[in-house]
Length: 568
Image (tube, rainbow, N blue to C red; front, side, top):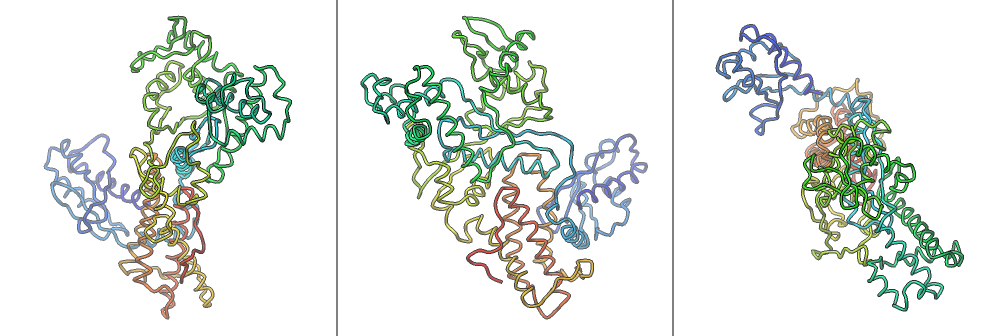
């Protein structure tokens, strides 16, 4: 990347100037910034201000000394000292042509970093198997998936994991809901309702009323017949809860696949309990002095780690809490050799951050390796009106319905347009509109337009020569240079987006490259009577297509070769 070359070049000038400035010892790494105004150069550095105190000289004089010591470089056109001591650097276009050659050589590997050897787990979605995913899960799904894609591009070995609670009170209520619907099919609902209507019974137990519960019950009866109804009450409930949860989990997997989200592993709370991991975690906390008994329960001293109160691990009933399972899950994660564990959580989990990191420290794990990405809520609207959302009452818009209505690409791209720490609105009617005002349509149309240009050139008998045989210096039009700069910015954008867990930066980069290409297409005729210029512009098109497809891929969105408005 040009930034790496510039830092090395600036450092050589700083080292050469150091004796004259009376600087010894370690020197700072020059930092780069892009000036807001083009007349201030392509890049600037404040390294002179950083060392002026040690040099005992005014920053501007230090900057002038460093600038005078800078060696010649083929990618630098001019250097100037500005303001209190900034060094502004103006670049030639030669480095942009090198970027184009690099894209041609690396193809879809462009901007992908070397492997770091670091193992990272990203755990996300993790909805309990009590029914279909709804639109409230959508942002979590695309955010976690995009973060995983970014970390992979940045060189990490990434595993995507889905963790769910398939035990406890919530699952019991779900199981009771499936049971009553199953018995209702047999005309035996009074065995559990005690003469109440099924609806009243579900109200009384805070059960699940969605029609999907009826569908699960019907499927269970179709597959297992009437046999489960004749089990003992405890066995029947356990069987029907398990059968319902299995069907819910199958639905969840299918929905996520349709949303272009996949997982490498699934872990359940029941798995942790069966393996003895929860008991082990509690025992380790006892031995470290971080667990104690009071009021008939077992508590974690989370106040010792910054929490506002201690947390229950085992209730007085003898049943463990979700938090105890969270502690066991920490051991389970790091026991598999991950160097970093990233949780993707909604804003309602903000209070859990301190206690989970505290538990990691108490369990002898590195709390700094435990990272929570907290995202804010999405307001789903239809024509400006809020979409009702109650999973238990069954009045919600499922993620499947959203996918069917607006499409996976449009839904994913729009959900990733905004920083995760900001709330956002998602108006279904606006997002599904196919026009150039729709961000994902605008970007995808850019990719399809390039594909059309390349097809048209080929159909016209124009063969693209190897890039080493093409005079890229012909690319001098302002629109061409701006497009090249947009392509050159992508590697640094990916690294920054990965470090900040900010996939919205990739969505914005895709919009930027598409916008630059559309301007180039408007200002510059690609295939013309000028053969050399045609060749150079065709390679610029190819590179733009490669980068757009790569950026879209990082947010899990397709890069179509043709669209309705496809033109050459």
